[in-house]
Image 1 (cartoon, helix red, strand yellow):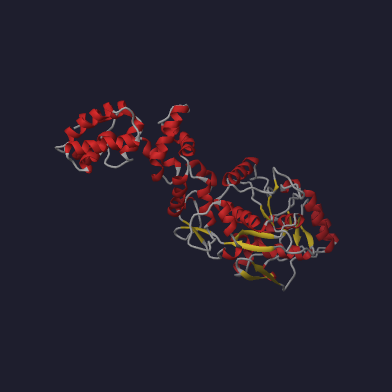
Image 2 (tube, rainbow, N blue to C red):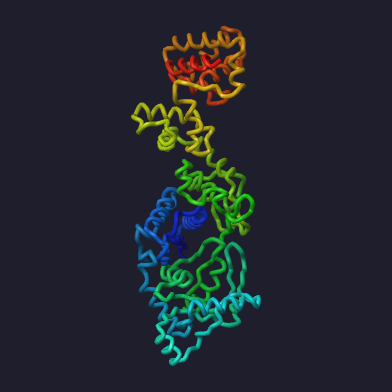
Amino acid sequence: MSEVRVRYAPSPTGPQHIGGARSALFNFLYARATGGKFVLRIEDTDLERSSRESEENILAALRWLGITWDEGVQVGGPYGPYRQTERLDTYRRHTQRLLEMGAAYYCYCSEEELAAEREELISRGETPRYLGKCRNLTAEQVREYEAQGRKPVVRFRVPDNQEVKIHDLVRGEVSFDSNLIGDFVIVKSDGIPTYNFAVVVDDTTMEITHVLRGEEHLSNTPRQVLIYQALNLPLPEFGHISLILGKDRSKMSKRHGSVSVAHYREQGYLPEGIVNFIALLGWAPPGEEEFFGMEELIGAFSLARVAKNPAVFDMDKLNYISSHYIKEAEPSRLAELAVPHLQQAGFLKGTPDAAGFEWLSVMMAAIQEYLAYVGQVVEYARFFYGEEVMLQGSDAREVLQGDQVPAVIELFLKKLDEAVELTPETVKGILKSVGKELKLGGKQVFMPLRVALTGETQGPELYNLIPLLGKRTAAKRVQSAMKQL
């Protein structure tokens, strides 16, 4: 078997979509698993919508996910250039070849004529397609059209009565009737190639052996196969990955969760969590394991386990997988990611110094088990910032009205003041000694202290919270809570 060469070829018309990231990941995994090459090509022939800003967003998203490419934009390679707008001469050569062979022809039909033809076919219940009005124009007709100032497109001459068969690596045998395709445009009137033509030229000149892409491209494949055949070029292997649906089984959209990778990065998801999650969208691991690092994915990945049924984007599953990686992360890494969220929420002014960053790392260690993504730090930051607390609801007030509470508060503040240092271990000792000296159960000690220190009946473990607050802030919080009774 020759070297596997796969590609990911996004259009830079917006941010990197989760579905596109999955296609890139599957191509990357297949290349790495087979010892092949992964090529990144930019399909920017949509001149009105394409932008370098979108291209940079896509490249940054892939790098953040750990998806690197062997050839392509920004890294070069032997088959460049890797942007379609820089390859127009290559497309012109292949267009001329098709015209000379009679496999393509100039079409002068106006938009109005094409629209009328389309409406007529729809009214008869037929598949809308081009019926070949310009297939066999005479020289006189061509002169007449050109005299009218019409600028032609180039259409591919689709053979009649041909069954186009594809062996899809995911879906098995798929066939199409050429009579339902119609002669399609391969070069627009401005000289820019259309997707179905450019992608064939690019894949063949870049020696792509496997085309792995989303199911939405399956309907394009017969057109591309016909171009390969007309040019007498070897076909790559095709594999079409399932659609991604929302949890309600409808097409994935923003109401099911953001569609862009950048959004999840901004929210504070870790890239390894996103990679693990999107790998499971349409690929089934061989065992029961759910958590895979990139190297483990490379070792386990195969096209045989890529499903043809739609994948479901489930935010609960994403957060479950993400929380696993948050729990495993170094607190200092989480602290760096937390800074912009805390700044935006008003908890932090400016960038923390070394001592402030160390404090923040300890705080993140105290709450990371509760987080699905770092942006959720804002929901817990109130426990750690500020000297005042507000009692939240009647339950909190009721806790502080227990008969034992004044003695618990008094003894706790005394032992807190006497403590040489505050660490989770020394705080555990203080809390234990308060209960022992007052002959009280754990709940009778912990609950009133939790409410007095946070204003709430639930929150981080006290032995993690109190060292971060320090003696002065902890005492002030208790006093402010008791004043509210």
